[in-house]
Length: 250
Image (cartoon, rainbow, N blue to C red; front, side, top):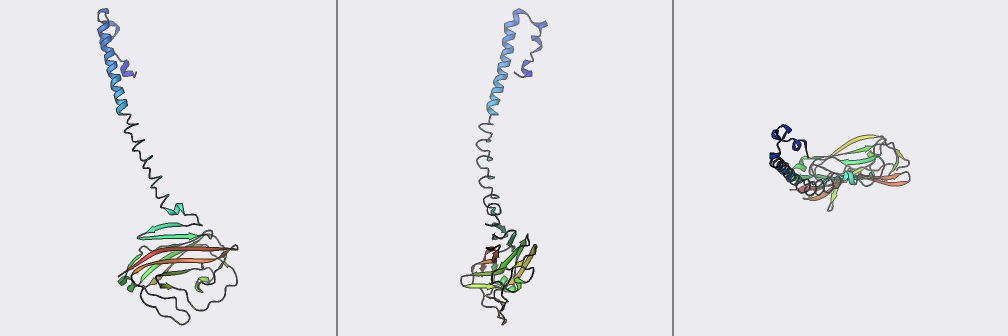
Protein backbone atom coordinates (compact mmCIF):
# COMPACT_ATOMS: atom_id res chain seq x y z
CA UNK A 1 0.00 0.00 0.00
CA UNK A 2 1.45 3.37 -0.99
CA UNK A 3 2.06 6.32 1.33
CA UNK A 4 -1.10 8.02 0.18
CA UNK A 5 -3.12 4.98 1.27
CA UNK A 6 -1.51 5.16 4.71
CA UNK A 7 -2.65 8.77 5.25
CA UNK A 8 -5.89 8.62 7.27
CA UNK A 9 -8.43 11.47 7.57
CA UNK A 10 -8.05 14.01 10.40
CA UNK A 11 -11.03 12.59 12.30
CA UNK A 12 -9.24 9.25 12.60
CA UNK A 13 -6.41 10.69 14.70
CA UNK A 14 -6.32 9.44 18.33
CA UNK A 15 -7.75 12.64 19.79
CA UNK A 16 -10.92 12.18 17.77
CA UNK A 17 -11.22 8.45 18.31
CA UNK A 18 -14.20 7.29 20.38
CA UNK A 19 -15.26 3.67 20.81
CA UNK A 20 -18.74 4.42 19.62
CA UNK A 21 -17.40 5.58 16.31
CA UNK A 22 -14.75 2.90 15.84
CA UNK A 23 -16.75 0.54 13.73
CA UNK A 24 -18.19 3.18 11.43
CA UNK A 25 -14.91 5.08 11.02
CA UNK A 26 -12.90 1.94 10.45
CA UNK A 27 -15.42 0.74 7.88
CA UNK A 28 -15.25 4.09 6.11
CA UNK A 29 -11.44 4.13 6.09
CA UNK A 30 -11.20 0.55 4.88
CA UNK A 31 -13.78 1.23 2.20
CA UNK A 32 -11.63 4.14 1.03
CA UNK A 33 -8.55 1.92 0.93
CA UNK A 34 -10.49 -0.82 -0.80
CA UNK A 35 -11.70 1.62 -3.44
CA UNK A 36 -8.16 2.94 -3.96
CA UNK A 37 -6.88 -0.57 -4.39
CA UNK A 38 -9.65 -1.30 -6.86
CA UNK A 39 -8.67 1.81 -8.78
CA UNK A 40 -5.04 0.78 -8.73
CA UNK A 41 -5.92 -2.72 -9.88
CA UNK A 42 -7.98 -1.31 -12.74
CA UNK A 43 -5.14 0.85 -13.89
CA UNK A 44 -2.90 -2.12 -13.63
CA UNK A 45 -5.19 -3.73 -16.19
CA UNK A 46 -5.57 -0.67 -18.37
CA UNK A 47 -1.91 0.11 -18.06
CA UNK A 48 -0.95 -3.52 -18.42
CA UNK A 49 -1.46 -2.81 -21.91
CA UNK A 50 2.16 -3.49 -21.43
CA UNK A 51 0.80 -6.95 -22.17
CA UNK A 52 -2.21 -6.30 -24.38
CA UNK A 53 -1.94 -2.79 -25.73
CA UNK A 54 1.71 -2.13 -25.24
CA UNK A 55 2.15 -3.72 -28.55
CA UNK A 56 5.51 -4.43 -27.11
CA UNK A 57 4.40 -7.98 -27.82
CA UNK A 58 1.80 -7.69 -30.58
CA UNK A 59 2.36 -4.42 -32.36
CA UNK A 60 5.86 -3.63 -31.26
CA UNK A 61 7.07 -4.10 -34.69
CA UNK A 62 10.39 -4.25 -33.07
CA UNK A 63 9.41 -7.93 -32.72
CA UNK A 64 6.88 -8.71 -35.46
CA UNK A 65 7.53 -6.06 -38.06
CA UNK A 66 11.00 -5.15 -36.99
CA UNK A 67 11.98 -4.55 -40.47
CA UNK A 68 15.38 -4.11 -39.05
CA UNK A 69 15.29 -7.90 -39.28
CA UNK A 70 12.83 -8.66 -42.08
CA UNK A 71 12.77 -5.61 -44.28
CA UNK A 72 15.98 -3.98 -43.19
CA UNK A 73 17.11 -3.87 -46.70
CA UNK A 74 20.30 -2.57 -45.31
CA UNK A 75 20.82 -6.29 -44.74
CA UNK A 76 18.72 -7.96 -47.44
CA UNK A 77 18.67 -5.52 -50.30
CA UNK A 78 21.75 -3.53 -49.51
CA UNK A 79 23.84 -6.08 -51.19
CA UNK A 80 26.71 -3.94 -50.27
CA UNK A 81 26.26 -5.77 -46.97
CA UNK A 82 25.02 -9.15 -48.13
CA UNK A 83 27.31 -9.54 -51.09
CA UNK A 84 29.96 -7.06 -50.20
CA UNK A 85 32.55 -9.77 -49.92
CA UNK A 86 35.16 -8.45 -52.26
CA UNK A 87 34.74 -11.87 -53.83
CA UNK A 88 31.00 -11.76 -54.41
CA UNK A 89 30.24 -8.11 -54.88
CA UNK A 90 27.72 -5.45 -54.04
CA UNK A 91 24.69 -3.87 -55.61
CA UNK A 92 24.02 -0.15 -55.49
CA UNK A 93 21.26 2.05 -56.88
CA UNK A 94 22.03 5.45 -58.36
CA UNK A 95 19.20 7.31 -60.05
CA UNK A 96 17.30 4.70 -62.06
CA UNK A 97 20.36 2.45 -62.39
CA UNK A 98 20.98 -0.77 -60.51
CA UNK A 99 24.72 -1.38 -60.56
CA UNK A 100 26.22 -4.76 -59.74
CA UNK A 101 29.93 -4.95 -58.96
CA UNK A 102 32.03 -8.06 -58.36
CA UNK A 103 35.71 -8.67 -57.69
CA UNK A 104 37.99 -11.45 -56.52
CA UNK A 105 41.12 -9.32 -56.80
CA UNK A 106 41.96 -8.15 -53.25
CA UNK A 107 41.40 -4.44 -52.69
CA UNK A 108 40.41 -3.68 -56.29
CA UNK A 109 36.91 -2.61 -57.35
CA UNK A 110 35.27 -1.10 -60.42
CA UNK A 111 32.08 0.95 -59.95
CA UNK A 112 29.80 2.38 -62.61
CA UNK A 113 28.69 5.84 -61.48
CA UNK A 114 26.13 7.01 -64.08
CA UNK A 115 22.89 8.51 -62.69
CA UNK A 116 20.51 7.47 -65.45
CA UNK A 117 20.17 4.23 -67.37
CA UNK A 118 17.31 5.23 -69.69
CA UNK A 119 18.11 7.23 -72.81
CA UNK A 120 16.02 8.61 -75.65
CA UNK A 121 17.26 8.66 -79.24
CA UNK A 122 17.51 12.49 -79.26
CA UNK A 123 19.62 12.34 -76.08
CA UNK A 124 21.97 9.80 -77.61
CA UNK A 125 22.28 11.77 -80.83
CA UNK A 126 23.63 14.65 -78.73
CA UNK A 127 26.05 12.33 -76.92
CA UNK A 128 25.71 10.88 -73.42
CA UNK A 129 28.60 10.70 -70.96
CA UNK A 130 29.16 7.36 -69.22
CA UNK A 131 31.22 7.46 -66.02
CA UNK A 132 32.88 4.82 -63.85
CA UNK A 133 35.77 4.54 -61.44
CA UNK A 134 38.21 1.95 -60.23
CA UNK A 135 39.69 1.81 -56.76
CA UNK A 136 43.04 0.19 -56.07
CA UNK A 137 43.97 -0.29 -52.42
CA UNK A 138 47.21 -2.24 -52.84
CA UNK A 139 50.19 -2.22 -55.18
CA UNK A 140 49.46 -5.68 -56.54
CA UNK A 141 51.55 -7.33 -59.23
CA UNK A 142 49.18 -8.74 -61.85
CA UNK A 143 49.35 -10.24 -65.35
CA UNK A 144 46.57 -8.72 -67.52
CA UNK A 145 44.65 -10.90 -69.96
CA UNK A 146 45.80 -10.48 -73.55
CA UNK A 147 42.63 -8.92 -74.97
CA UNK A 148 42.80 -5.59 -73.15
CA UNK A 149 43.58 -2.43 -75.06
CA UNK A 150 47.03 -0.93 -75.40
CA UNK A 151 46.05 2.22 -73.51
CA UNK A 152 44.90 0.40 -70.39
CA UNK A 153 48.20 -1.47 -70.22
CA UNK A 154 50.30 1.67 -69.90
CA UNK A 155 52.33 1.95 -66.66
CA UNK A 156 50.10 2.78 -63.71
CA UNK A 157 46.88 2.07 -65.58
CA UNK A 158 44.51 -0.66 -64.53
CA UNK A 159 43.92 -2.96 -67.53
CA UNK A 160 40.20 -2.91 -68.31
CA UNK A 161 37.62 -2.52 -71.05
CA UNK A 162 34.10 -1.12 -71.23
CA UNK A 163 31.31 -2.33 -73.49
CA UNK A 164 27.64 -1.66 -74.22
CA UNK A 165 26.07 -4.65 -75.92
CA UNK A 166 23.07 -6.92 -76.42
CA UNK A 167 20.77 -8.23 -79.14
CA UNK A 168 23.54 -8.23 -81.74
CA UNK A 169 24.61 -4.63 -80.99
CA UNK A 170 27.99 -3.63 -79.56
CA UNK A 171 29.91 -0.51 -78.64
CA UNK A 172 33.41 -0.75 -77.12
CA UNK A 173 36.97 0.43 -77.38
CA UNK A 174 38.12 -3.10 -78.11
CA UNK A 175 40.09 -2.79 -81.31
CA UNK A 176 42.76 -0.11 -81.15
CA UNK A 177 45.17 -1.79 -83.49
CA UNK A 178 48.11 -4.06 -82.80
CA UNK A 179 49.44 -3.98 -79.23
CA UNK A 180 52.76 -5.41 -78.08
CA UNK A 181 52.45 -8.80 -76.36
CA UNK A 182 52.27 -8.93 -72.58
CA UNK A 183 55.55 -10.37 -71.41
CA UNK A 184 55.71 -9.35 -67.76
CA UNK A 185 53.58 -8.58 -64.74
CA UNK A 186 52.19 -5.10 -64.15
CA UNK A 187 52.29 -3.39 -60.75
CA UNK A 188 49.13 -1.47 -59.91
CA UNK A 189 49.37 2.03 -58.45
CA UNK A 190 47.00 2.53 -55.45
CA UNK A 191 44.39 5.25 -55.79
CA UNK A 192 40.89 6.07 -57.05
CA UNK A 193 40.62 6.75 -60.76
CA UNK A 194 37.59 8.34 -62.44
CA UNK A 195 36.99 7.56 -66.11
CA UNK A 196 34.40 8.60 -68.68
CA UNK A 197 33.52 8.24 -72.34
CA UNK A 198 30.84 9.60 -74.62
CA UNK A 199 28.36 7.39 -76.45
CA UNK A 200 26.06 8.47 -79.26
CA UNK A 201 24.06 5.25 -79.28
CA UNK A 202 25.89 3.68 -82.22
CA UNK A 203 27.75 0.45 -82.87
CA UNK A 204 31.55 0.55 -82.83
CA UNK A 205 34.40 -1.81 -81.93
CA UNK A 206 37.09 0.85 -81.77
CA UNK A 207 39.19 2.67 -84.37
CA UNK A 208 41.50 -0.31 -85.07
CA UNK A 209 44.58 0.95 -86.88
CA UNK A 210 42.54 2.12 -89.86
CA UNK A 211 40.31 4.74 -88.24
CA UNK A 212 37.04 2.79 -88.33
CA UNK A 213 33.95 5.07 -88.27
CA UNK A 214 30.92 4.68 -86.04
CA UNK A 215 28.29 2.20 -87.19
CA UNK A 216 24.49 2.07 -87.16
CA UNK A 217 22.40 3.29 -84.21
CA UNK A 218 21.25 0.84 -81.54
CA UNK A 219 17.53 0.14 -81.97
CA UNK A 220 15.19 0.71 -79.02
CA UNK A 221 15.69 -2.03 -76.48
CA UNK A 222 17.53 -3.14 -73.34
CA UNK A 223 21.30 -3.55 -73.22
CA UNK A 224 24.10 -4.12 -70.70
CA UNK A 225 26.85 -1.66 -69.90
CA UNK A 226 29.83 -3.44 -68.35
CA UNK A 227 33.35 -2.46 -67.31
CA UNK A 228 35.65 -5.40 -66.68
CA UNK A 229 39.19 -6.58 -66.09
CA UNK A 230 40.67 -10.07 -66.22
CA UNK A 231 44.07 -11.61 -65.69
CA UNK A 232 46.05 -13.53 -63.11
CA UNK A 233 47.26 -12.60 -59.64
CA UNK A 234 49.50 -14.78 -57.51
CA UNK A 235 49.06 -17.59 -60.02
CA UNK A 236 45.24 -17.46 -59.85
CA UNK A 237 42.75 -15.98 -62.36
CA UNK A 238 40.90 -12.83 -61.34
CA UNK A 239 37.85 -10.99 -62.67
CA UNK A 240 36.72 -7.50 -61.68
CA UNK A 241 33.43 -6.23 -63.14
CA UNK A 242 30.75 -3.60 -62.76
CA UNK A 243 27.58 -3.71 -64.84
CA UNK A 244 24.22 -1.97 -65.28
CA UNK A 245 21.23 -2.56 -67.52
CA UNK A 246 20.42 0.37 -69.80
CA UNK A 247 17.36 1.08 -71.93
CA UNK A 248 17.15 2.91 -75.25
CA UNK A 249 13.74 4.36 -76.11
CA UNK A 250 12.60 6.27 -79.21
